[in-house]
Image 1 (cartoon, rainbow, N blue to C red):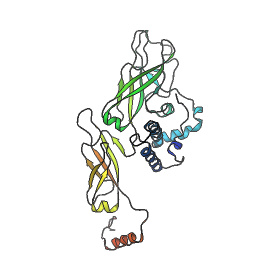
Image 2: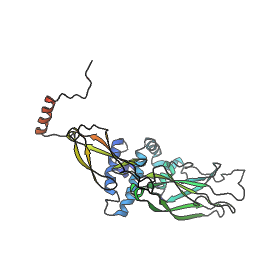
Image 3: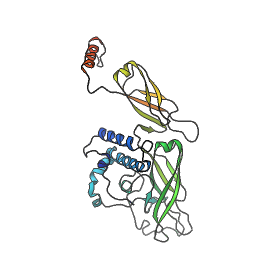
Image 4: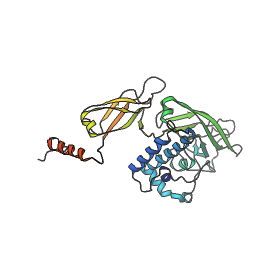
Length: 321
């Protein structure tokens, strides 16, 4: 179990006062390098890809980033909570546990997981009113990092769960496989029957619920089953129109940019998003246009811009009254 402090700024190679844009740029650069689909050493790249995803998960979220900055390297002085806890039907807290194989470190889970009840422990959760002899075990919630490639094709993930057995008082490690369904959307919970907290007496265990979090991708982000891509255009491509090659999860496609396209305009390609379950239906692919200007121009290019300024009647500003 890795409970050490994670220097997320160092992971992304940015300073502690880096802007949101700098963090986004650093993540994308690293993600393109270590994405398992393009890296030569896939095993080490996969581990690195998870690290930079975790760092991006925290530093790209203003609330999580503020909490992380407040913790600092003296995080232990804040009191290290256990990895998480189970909850029964009445909301009573169960005992601590920790995961393996979900794609998040224990440090992240202890402080930044969105699961209900995380960050608390109770050695006597039932107080003066112990449960009946036969009581079903509490359900357990956790998070699981899922890549878009796993969403596209489905997968089976080995997961481990370490938990204290209330009957024996000993820590037990359970290993099992979790099926990641095709088309599972961000925020969806995967139920794993019988892998929650053990019950007492003759009662059965609770269930495990893993909340899906889509791993950040260097090119795309998701909304439901729809896939979004930032399409950068030169000014003349937007004005004159163009045919450009854009990546999708199925491979590159040709996309026609209409003449007169504007920034923030979206070009839609139907049925090129994420699958909607096992059927043939899929979400859509959206390319969101951003028009970029060259940072430097040659003398010849500047002369052409000057000429355009002289002959063009276009103005982006309204006429003064």
